[in-house]
Length: 316
Ligand code: NAD
Image (cartoon, protein in one colour):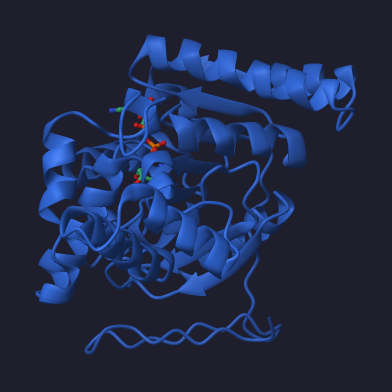
């Protein structure tokens, strides 16, 4: 990519360039931290250990989530060994690079932090305000948010908006699910993000074998602005009887050459995550075309969140 032009929302136009003349030094990443050991955080930690071969401190407020996540990592590594994709030594080496922790204080000597806690704005703001104090001053603070404004997350790192020491090192590295499989990653800069932070995020994601796409800090960014209305429309087709579950998934799977239909995909993403993103799109744009389907809201209220809760459009 020779240069990157980003068009922001009206009033916040900004131009980023990664041409050699303006390229700033990317942070050298020797150790990383991942906050949240759920499906995304665990995937990011595992890929970092395998591809970049850096030590990873994996922080989760729940010891049970850490135990479950690390057991799942071991299962994925064993599967790779059994399919001869990696050797036992490589699996052991990757596993030895993952260190669990229940406190953010253990991130005081890492170079790059990726936050992957649930899609709750106040939770992310609180974590970033703490990370800004705990992390070394050179460390990049990245979020895996699906929809929350990067500018707003960056703003939570400072009490004085004129001081961009911390907010300039906040960026989004929006990995796709499942992280070990999907090559794409969306990189999003907030209004305060520096060129060097953006370059560091792009360089680190490339080291993980990912293909970065840069998008503007606009509701839903690119991937979810396109994907979530598609999933939401499929749910509206179901609730209004245009088609049943299997017809909807079959026509999109077999008709557009994707690995699964929209309802199964929603189950894999998590219906709570889908609803949270649709709410952001609807509330931030005020455009009725993004109104979340009533059936989606009802399913989340029932606790039918998809694969992670054992029940969604399909049973697991
Ligand atoms: P998840 O529910 O599977 O995992 C979240 C983890 O965060 C849990 O293990 C939880 O214990 C932990 N956590 C909660 N509060 C915490 C705290 N205060 N400190 C540390 N850990 C805490 O969620 P997920 O699906 O992995 O999503 C994480 C983020 O990634 C969200 O922002 C989501 O929108 C985004 N995302 C999700 C997908 C997807 O397909 N699921 C895809 C791209 C991005």
